[in-house]
Length: 353
Image (cartoon, rainbow, N blue to C red; front, side, top):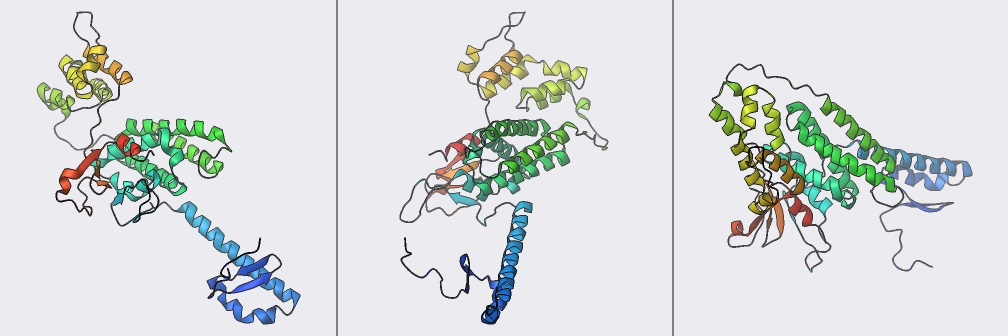
């Protein structure tokens, strides 16, 4: 079918005719243009010109691929917010995707904020469970770069080790399932790249398993030096029952405090509703409610309550998504009343069409 329309050899560009058709000269090769006519008089000179052009093109492409593979920088934007639109309008065309929001909300900086760290980790875990296939190529690379920064931060700070171990295990399990569907366009990118990423995840797991917790050399008051009432008060601030169990293994006094019935009762009431608790009642040998066993049974049956220092928020008036405390251009008379905090799962659900 003949090409109809404006000449594809647009003005301002230089073209040369070869055996394979017309090829465009690159800008850095403009010094060849003035000598084309003289070189093309003989077959040897003509082949030399084409060989030089092809060599320069290959070298430039290899340099570009090498830069793209080695880059560890997040896909950044100047704005710290994103407009969430799910359809085309006269003003905007297309729709916002999960990968686009993941790229533009600056999660790389958020992991260094203790108020946002748990939120980002939980979001990475949810994406690893069910949303990896919905991310674009740049979003998947950004995901792995942020995950690498999270692991390095945990190795340096020696905090939240179990949390990151669970995240890596979830991601590795999901990838093992997805890479088995080779040839079905499940994951974006070469399958060898994903095998390399899985090897990297295994290496991170080994580093976390072999981490040695260094005891601070500062001399002062320790947890054991505090009154028992203060130690129990500190335990009541824990949101995960596994942390209480681990703390109880430090000393005999902490072991006694970790078995306190009121401590586990408050923990159950914090995470679960009265209706959920009534469905999972467990009595001890003395006829009392065993709140500790009830907690671990409730965890297996129902999701725990999630609370974070700082959440993502959505403006119901202008549909702009941003972190708490971030200003965004809103035309509402009272923008504060239009903001709704989103949990990590709410953030995922926002981009399900």
